[in-house]
Length: 304
Length: 134
Image 1: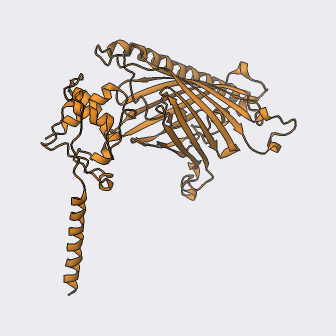
Image 2 (image 1 turned 135 degrees about the vertical axis):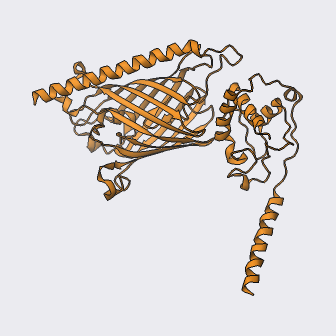
Image 3 (image 1 turned 180 degrees about the vertical axis):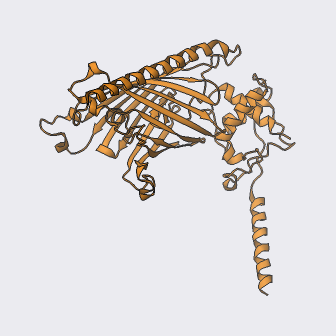
């Protein structure tokens, strides 16, 4: 038993180190591309457009925000695990999780939003601010955005047990997003995040750092393929409980297809996450990539 | 007798469709400010800019103007005005005029100032529209 735990620790550590190595290589690539793509023309200092199709890519936020004065309606669906095959048509007839949300662009770089998720009746308030824009000449090689999400669990207060306080309902997610558009087809982004819940279920930790790597590649003028990989960092020195590693959240892999039009974005994908809200996903995901715990999901975004 | 009835129905349907086509208004001439008529395109009309313009066209314009810009997109049938044929020899707008039309729109055509905010993207679209002419 002890040996197995040690092996798990070693494999998690080696996975983290591999992930960090990939990130380091990516950052080196980003900055080395600065000079090679430099252009000296009147568009040199213009911000690049269309790094991603929208502010949401599968399970993660991107550096994109709605235009100033633009609304964005989100309809998100996560079905059951595909493991039962035709019995529940790969999870499509199984219990599903749904989120409806509305974002609004206050300026071209700042948005606010509200969303409601079926599971745990989570009401979310979110904001995103793009601090830097990548320029055409790559004099600024990356776009950088800050994202914050506050969730309020609106289940009956009996759910929270004794000594209930309103703050028990709150969960926080904050993220810094760094993205680079390599060319009209390929964009990548790296996004470290921090999650905190005031009150957790079972022996789940209250705090969790995570790293996310996402990318998309256009295959036609309006269709792309994309991926997200999110690795929660299960850091021993941050542990609050003994043996809490048994409840460590699992990493997520999402991959799918995106179709973008002037007014709509459609994304269909396979993912390990079922929570939709990022703080729930990062702290509580027990679906394992290696065990094939995938489920179908889709996002529909309508701009108006 | 039955055959005559079928032919009559088909003939009525064809005439009906033809009449619907005639109903579609031809677009009135655009009123374009003088500054746009002579505006120079600062972007080289190369393969890269045309490809970029094609991506933008497919995202924002295809649904009305069609895949090849001849005005036969899936939404075109619901429009009151014919969206135009960019492959026609009558399509003689200058680069600046095309930029004005794209950014401002009129009637059923929305303006794309906010949806295509980048100047490079706007001129790339102009280069692509020019490339559709046969």
